[in-house]
Image (cartoon, rainbow, N blue to C red; front, side, top):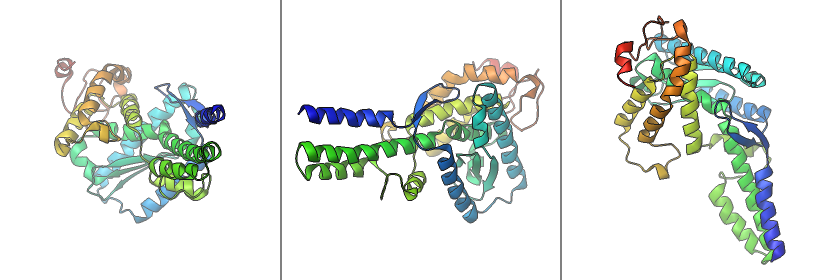
Length: 315
């Protein structure tokens, strides 16, 4: 029995130790990553190339220019932050691209490496440039925080753990039982059709079916809010944007059953983070950007056209 407990403890220790520890920019959270930047970027580029080969690029010149403008402003702000805060080596991982595609879904994503895609269906909900910056800031935050690599690492560790668990049970309890336990655990934890833990197709399969955790989503909400403010966009637009999204979806799904925070929780968190984000926004001075995308005077602060006097009543 002592051997069994020792081996089980070894499984837990091995899964915990897997990967290289690093800190997430802005939040300082420590996470462990087992997949290299080179591997992740290779997978990302493969998926991005396949997606763009089948996607229809938007013919809306105005909105396409807006996506590229907002994306570049955010990319510049993110790179400046990374360079000034000890993460300069991370900048080499980003080869930014900004695309608007024809799709009615209200969606956008930023793949590792800075490959940004916005769907036309998002624009009825963003309604202005500052809200678009909130969305893209969130998506860029996923890439900066390496949430894809983090989730792949978790799946790799879980798969490794189920394999070791089967071996442990076979040797300590009885032949065959471990195989059954491993299959059950593997079916629950791992991505579908994992053939080999370190095979190239396994990495790619993981990447295609990846979902961020609720904690990842909340972290991206926070980081994206700060990145938008750093880029000169009023972070208060995040509240009205998510209120529009909440009204449109009218979802009654429990947060417990979702990998995303509820709209209400998101809005509550954003209101809590706004005072910090606005420090970065006010620090931009005359380099702030209005909701329409044009530079604004440091004497007038806009929230989708509101004046600074109206803004003070909302705090």
